[in-house]
Length: 495
Ligand code: SF4
Image 1: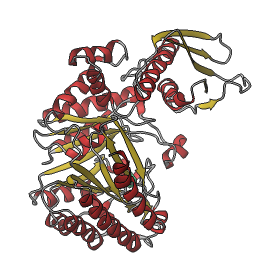
Image 2 (image 1 turned 120 degrees about the vertical axis):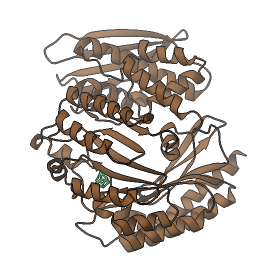
Image 3 (image 1 turned 180 degrees about the vertical axis):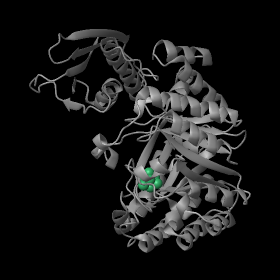
Image 4 (image 1 turned 90 degrees about the vertical axis):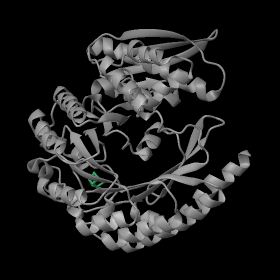
């Protein structure tokens, strides 16, 4: 499908709208001057006249007549950020309405393509709508299903008391350990596959320890405390007990005091009682053990390199340690899985002593091996995955859990969502801060993305560390310096 627009800033978001209706079909963004190739073409043009935006969406499929729809909206004034936001919203809506009318499809999240629906709901309330009016805007204008709008509203309620708005006194800390024992079929992450090489581990840990040391000094200079530390991956435990212990002890020596401390223990084959005791001994209160599925056939199919028995063994060892919370990650819609497999996995997981459950919908990312070899696998259809997601929600509720954060990704089956569930008062603050983008984040390790909130302008800026382990090691000095400029010099410049 070709996509044409006269608004370069809208390109990517309009492409996301096209994908809602044309799935994994590639979307080629072409200039308005590009010659017509006779393929399917959709377009969105914006013209501003007399204080109004006139949005014109069109669709022409091969061998069919062109359909055109127009949407007229008051052109937003009062700041660039707000103006772009509103133009984006109306343009997407105009294209969405046309594509829905022509294809007859009804995506569960309507015209929403962004990662964070709850953030948009909150934004609508900040624009002056009541909670009910924001809900109504979701279902009426944005065409979100009543069920999904209710889920977003429920999550907003669950976050009350856990979100800190405009808090400039503290930051969250993310520490990435980008190694895994094997590479999962659906993975799009840049992580070193230790089954192929372990040559980078020593140097990576050394660089990370240096970066942490400097980061701690930086946050002290800025007078910031730490609200939550999250050690994620990759699979942090994949680098072995000694290396992980060095990282966790460095974190503890960098930041003492009270903060939420989570380690994404990850793959159960890299966990045993010793590893778990070490993690707890370093003051970590929360861990995650991630089976994704309890079907051994699927685990083999997606290259996870562990069995369902490993999950139960790791869980049994973890249950003997008084962690404040144990999370489990599951994925619905894995190759070869349907409702039966999902029901079996959820049944087993519901009997385990966990406090959080995170249910993902499979996303077929472009850089994953799955995307390359898609024709070799049988993926469940959107309706099946939707039924699995609904079952996961019923299971979480039967375990006494409530949904407390939500995000969406590109290329998700059925345009569904990922949801984090929790028992009362076991919410992970880091997850809420990340998804709602309410807090600054200092990120360490390869590919880590730091975020600096600028509350005076209601925007945030990002800084990415070098991607990929070899680059990170090679450029660690420059990465440390850039973080310093990003956090300190820019803050001073605005004072
Ligand atoms: S465990 Fe996560 S990061 Fe590692 S290969 Fe699998 S999906 Fe990728």
